[in-house]
Amino acid sequence: LVLIIFLASFFCWGLVKVWNPANYTEIQHETFPWEGDALLPKLAVSRVGNVTIKIDHCTIHNGNAKAKICLDVRTATCKLADGHQSLQQECLLPSLSVGGTFGDATYRYVTMKVYAPKGSKDGKNKMSVWWEQRESPTWTGVLTQLYTWSEKIPMKSELFFQKVTALQGESFGLFGRSGNDESEDLLQQKHYMVKKSEYSYAGEIGEANSQGLVLGQSLYFRAAHTMREDFYEVYSVLRLLESLGGLYTSFSFILFVPIICAYKLLRNCSVLLDYCSRRRETRSLRRATEVLVEEINVAGHAPEGSLQHPRLETERVSLHAPHARVEVVPEVSENRCNSEPQVVKLPGMMLT
Image (tube, rainbow, N blue to C red; front, side, top):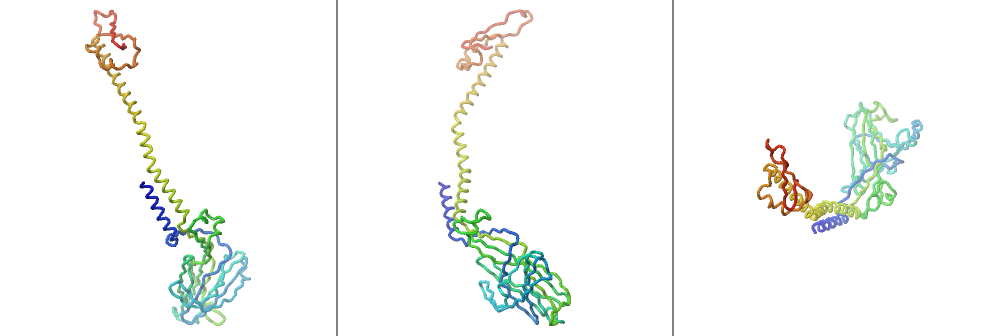
């Protein structure tokens, strides 16, 4: 009864979790080699001081840098929203794609170069990069990063963005539970890019554009070497049934196996006790017989009361043949060394 009540409570709690999938979601990550191209998230820039920004969308085929093709990218006013506030910034076009790495059949990336007048005071000119970082299929945040530089030490930074495929599980739990199979295509999917990593290094000093402005900061937006698949598994009906079955099996093994063992032991207890009793009586009879034989051997004749020995009279066991003869060899004195041995007959059975 206790087990049934516990399983019923567990089943009801599981139904509550199935009814509220947003509160009981587990995320499973898988990483794969990068394939194809992907669009960058919405990017924006903000500048402080007298700076000029030049943005290019470049493509290199088969590692031929001399045949590089770069297209000028314009900016426009837009809004970045993170669910709590809306920020109006200078945004890049939303159709910028990246993919591959240098030497691949197609290597596509975005460059952003920031110029400032020569002789500018260090720290006076600044630039910030804003982008939408999608943390889940249902929530998107806005991140920003500030960049500063010195005319004596221009900086270069490479930002790597990773392609993410988000799979949303369903309440019944039938699709997407057997690994990477065709059933995943039946789930709701969303594709987006997130920033994975970044590293910076010093650039060349004195590089300037046609207007005489000195290059201070260079940013390269590239594709990462891997892409990620996120499976948002909600608490489903099939998962509830699996947990319930495993729980029932565990409790059954813990509770029922000791009960069955105790039942088998008690069932065979009478046979075991009877066997032990017979063994005990046999040992007692054998011990009494050995004592009696020793007394006869020592005294030279049957001791008084031996004919009425209770164990010998009541127990009829086949320790010896029923008509055997017992030869008792008493102590022989020096004058009777050639005499014949005495023979003692016992009623009921003869002891040798």
